[in-house]
Length: 287
Ligand code: ATP
Image (cartoon, rainbow, N blue to C red; front, top):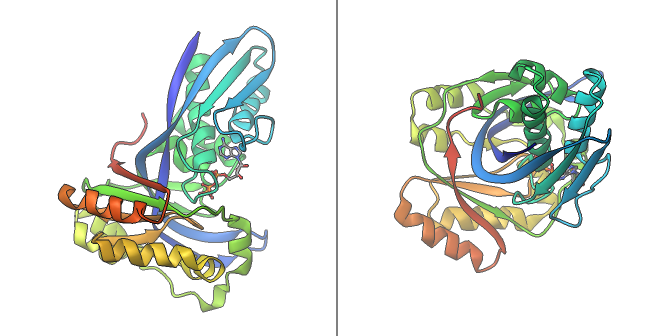
């Protein structure tokens, strides 16, 4: 038996860091939403008791370092599953980009194996297993739009923003999330107004959303990689309604309401950046 599952990318409409915790993690407040740039995960049941991973991108690990492998392994251990699985990951989401590609692959693997192995687990069960793999996995299990708190693993689903285009541009660098958090000076942060953003989303106030986009990690990543700030400025100049870096970067996204503007912004960015995507928000969460 074989099934395919979509693993969509996320963007952060806001990302705030409240303080550093005793356990070394940062306490965050993030609003995340899902976009229709997705990896595809093919799961094929194996009679032999083993996990095989194959990835379309050569530089993503195909062993136990792969987050999809870890997802399958956690399920096997916890539910004493003696069957195996072959996981093929067709990568479309750029890697180490701030788009939670690996986390989404893990979440899609959890959802897919829940069906393939007929485990009957709820999304809450899968999210709690996902949290052991990475902070963004729980959000990716649910999809849709959510406020994430704690270290990012406590998910409160919220209404979806009004439909719009999202242009993503990723400069050819990979950013280490750990490095960005290490360099962040928590006492100097200008905090987000998260409640204002939630209120704008709930009112379907597109302009209010654009006006409240805010990511406190931008300054750190911009100081390390000035080209990320340059892409943000260019995207704004080409006519995006609101522009922000996603996660710890380096991907920058722009929200665009008018379809007629999408081509101009896309083509303008393609002039100096290879990885540019024009996608839509996905408003519905996974069921
Ligand atoms: P986040 O936004 O959650 O910080 P990211 O988009 O910045 O994530 P990923 O694309 O998830 O970063 O990749 C980060 C690292 O995780 C990569 O360097 C890669 O080696 C490793 N990794 C493990 N599994 C995967 C996977 N299935 N897809 C991509 N990267 C993976």
